[in-house]
Amino acid sequence: MKAFVKTLSAVAMSVAMSCAWAAPKMSADVVVIGSGGAGMTASVAAAENGAKVIVLEKNAFTGGGAAFAEGIFAVESRLQRDAADAGTREESFKKDMERSFWTADPIRVRDFIWGSAENVDWLMKHGVPVFFRKESVIKEPTWHVFGHYKNTEHGAALIQCMQDNAERLGVKFYLNTPAVGLIKDSNGAVVGVKAKSQKDGEFEIAAKKVIIATGGFGDSAEKVKNWGHRDFKVWRPSVPLNKTGDGIQMAYDVGAQHGEYGFVSHVGTPASHVKFAGNLYTASWQPSALWVNSDGIRFADEGIALSFGLAGDAVYQQFGSEAWSIFDATQVKYMMEQGADSGIGVIVAPGTKLPNLQKEIDEALAKGSDGFVKASSVAELAKKIGVPEKALQKSVEDYNKACDFGADPMFFKTPRYLRKIDTKNMYAIKLNSYFFCTFGGLKTNLKHEVLDTHNKPIPNLYATGADVSGFTSVFYNPYASGHLFGYAVYSGRHAGENAAHALGLKK
Image (cartoon, rainbow, N blue to C red; front, side, top):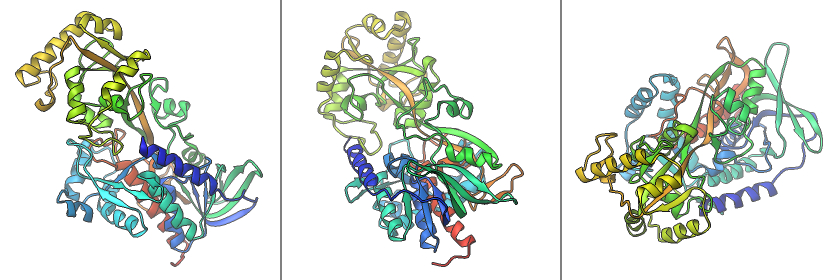
């Protein structure tokens, strides 16, 4: 929660730093649409290579989803080496492609992985504080987390640091000023952007290069349904940030090729009177619990709680996209005294003790939480969570037998997380599926130029980050921490460099 408070402080600063309203008929070498991780690095890279840069941001603050993210992917970085915990680029490439069933673009994946360590060096050179950390026991050692910068941390620190770099280089930011369309000449080349401000209405910016960095479409129910083929009623964004696929659609309108779409999912609880990232919320993410669906049937190895993406996808597949996590008083004591087995990113680190867990449990029950209950028998629990008693009884009995035996014949859960449920002192908390963000939509080449329906570059148009397909499959890589954020920073940076170099500009 501390990280979110600092992030909101950073947002407030960004609002205060908003530039004056744009005047009609402006011009720039490069216009960047969006000011998240991809847009910020694109603007810095273009400006330090000699370009005059304008950044358009539809929100009243910079940062987008990146301000709420934590760290980026990298392999064979100096930080990994120093921690004696590095994998190899070759291993990472093979795993990425196998997990995507070779549906990801292998050339793009290789390019990103091989450049990921140098990408960390570039950020550190620009003053971004980075440290290496492994996210969980089942995730690979790829996470490079951002530390403190001024009054911010994690993704917000990256944004603030990059914004400071950009402003020193003369980049102009226009907030509350969405791009509403691209301008093409008679030869089909993009030559500008249509934008809209509260003061001037719609106006045009002539641009030699345009970089799309709008962060996906996760806040558009229509696009989540039509592009992502998910039900927005049960598949909800966890951090609504007005991401409605504007940049992707603008590119489609000028002839861009359609790519595939995906989501970065996670599990969470919708229970009332449960504070986000609090002790009780953290308890809902633990691998030692028993998970059942609305039929009262166990449906997964609960150890997937150690990878939020796997957990979110598993819960989404259940009827109503919901489930229940069952644990007991013994596990409550364990979490209070020994700490959580599974953390929540860097907000709650693995091993963090939960001293207020019992207090938060008592408060949620006293206030009548609609998604958290206590029971002293399986029959009582089944009634309170609305599942068939016989099915739940069998699920609990089978699970407890597996715990006694020390092996899980159903889903082969790691024995260390097999902890018997005391049926006389149980708790259950509702789980729902959510997603942090979307990714995909536009096809690009290795220069990050947008490709048309004939697989040729649309002149002067680039796309980055979550607006791009191919850096992973439609199922987000749940093992390599920081994959999307890393690609956003990497593609934004190189799109900015390439746009400036294509103009023949010098540092």
